[in-house]
Length: 339
Image (cartoon, rainbow, N blue to C red; front, side, top):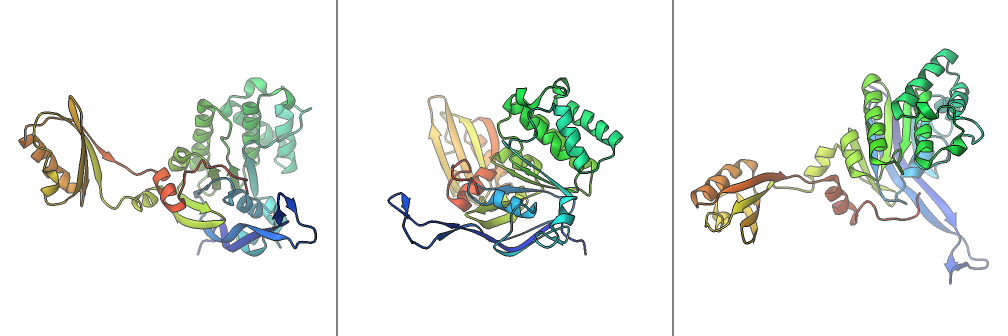
């Protein structure tokens, strides 16, 4: 049996916080507890690009910090390539790397190239290979022209690109990307996603765990996604399977020419679950929910026989945003204190 790249079992992390009264800690009051992770269990297989979706404060960053040996769990257990994050932390660190969006990484008095060289040598990357990787990464993210510029002179986006490069320079077996495209413009974020896909394709045995606020990014990149809220893992599956949870029946939207009657009684057809419409001066917008997708042929035929012309027809697909809202109760961009 293949050893999971990442496995957590009932992982829990709590923090002691002072009890609040009128905005100030009470004198002599015992501390309370804030639970950042609440019996979180996940399993990530080698070669998988695994995503974590959750608002700020959901527990994503706490989970990554435990897996990267930066934080000890309060209870439960966590393993990276079968190694315990508490008792075998040193062995884990040589196999992993981590990039956090918005983090201040590197030394401002050093240039981009010097910073990347320093990190490569901390991981004992052979010198010739380190130079090759640095040149390739800078080219990939469009930083070649800034290679000899001090970090302190870079823009926020350029620093984030340099930070991204740092994560890949060591060619880790498992890479943790915590909001890697945070603060990047559209083109830079697209470049980052393309590089991630290429890196995974060229290294079938490598594993990548990604947290992101961007639904499209998770849908585009991830093999499986775990939705986490208030420290608990609510669901874990492929993006397609998660979407199927929120739409039991296929839904079609149509635009029809007005003035005919073929669409008025569609809900009487066998297999039609529901039909709603909005009639405008020149067209009718129709939304039909079916018990099964094959019924759409009968619906189209009924509309055409009634004298209407179909201007457009599309199937409505649920999104990860729909899944998230149904499970969590609010959108992903709800802000909070990151945990």
